[in-house]
Every structure is written in C-alpha cells, then in structure tokens.
Image 1 (cartoon, rainbow, N blue to C red):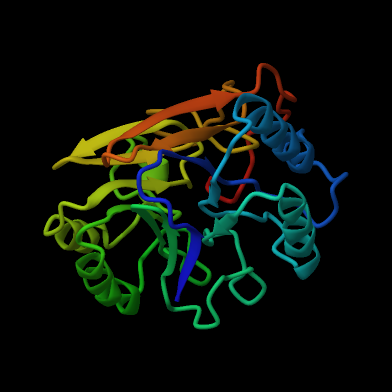
Image 2: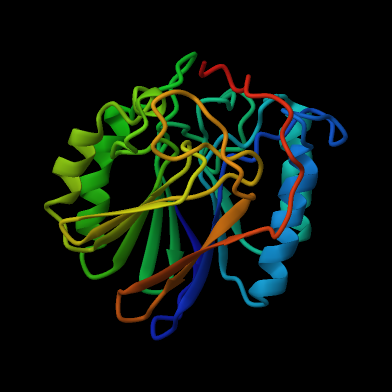
Length: 271
C-alpha cells in the first residue's frame, strides 16, 4: 500500500525529519535531567515557526523511552493536532507490539508518495537488541519497489546508521546488514538519500551519489567521535529537507537556542 500525500509533480516539497524523542509514559517525567516531552514540543514549535509550509514529517525511531500504549497514544494525539502528514518507523527502544505502524503487515515497508518523490520507511529494530538489522523480507521487497519507482526519486528512512560514526561505543550498535542494503541500492540511480536516527547527532556521508544523513535527537545529544559513551552540549533539533522537483535535495539541521542541561551520563543502557 502507498500512502499518497501529494500527486503534484512539478513542485518542491518540504520534509522534516525528527528522531529519538524518547518519550516517557507521562509528560511531566524527567529523563537524564530533562523532560523529553517539553523538549520535543519545543523542537516542533521551532520547526513550525521556521517553516510555515511543511508537507511531511518523518520520525526515524526511538519514539518512546517508556514504550507503553499510553506513550504512543499521546504522541499520536499531539502529531495529529499539527495537521501535517506524519509517518514513523521504530527504533531499538520502541516496542513493536504497541508501536503505531502504518501497515497491518508489520513486516512490510511503508511507502509514502510525495509528487515525484517517494519515501520508503524500513524497520531496522530487532527485539531485545540495541543494534539494527533490516529483516530479509523487507530487503527482498526493496528492489521490487525501487524498480517500480524507476522514474521517481526515492528517500529511504530507518533508525540505525549504516555507516560508522567513528565512535566505537555506538558503532557496535549500527545497522548490522548495511552491506546488504548498500548492495541493493547501488543498482538504482533513483535513491537520493538515506536518513537515520539512533546516533543523536548530525552527520552527512556521501556514497556513490547517495547522501546518508543522521539527525540530532529532540532530547539529549551524543558527543561525536567519542570512543566511550559521552553526552554532548549541543541543543536538540531536527532536519529540514527540501525535495526539489529536479531530484536534488537541500538540507539543514536546526536546533533550539537553549535547552535543559543534563545531570547524568548514565543513560539509555549503552554503557
């Protein structure tokens, strides 16, 4: 099934990537010295002030730190209140039994049509594991989808990072079958970018004409190129992506100008 957001072809679109919101069961609860709910809403407020016209929001996982039905229900209520089409794919902290998938078949990729652009959301989360793996069933469907979309431009979204971040502690938790993903997409010139979360930091890696983009969390940030787990003092943010009618993309990370300071380095179970 394809979710149709727009059929206009000769048009640029604005897509926003948010990631790693780590929401708790109740909005007033704190996590590592900050309130993820408050920070998330502040990031969304900044997004709406900066970009009055947004066509699509994509959440690349770790939606919840406490992955209960109540957490997901509150997220959905809030996102619906924005009146902007939104889609999400799970991360390692999410619970697939409660996660708001878009397809009845949880093994199926989510495909979103945006004029000449298509966004394919893949699930890289594995039960009871921090590292990622795209299921064989989804990888087998991917070349079929890319073939069908040969005359369209494609962005792929998943939670785990395919390329190393030069941080030993987080790179052991990367996408484990990234080589299979790369072997698949290198056969198709219509894949323009892959966006991910998980690493709580901004990065851009270019590979064979494809941009690999990671994005800051809406809450805590990880220190780049750190051998051991460490938090960064950068503020929460999101990624703006302009999908141009000619197949090019423009992208920029926007951050809050201030945010709550952290009180602990023991977080997320990565230590």
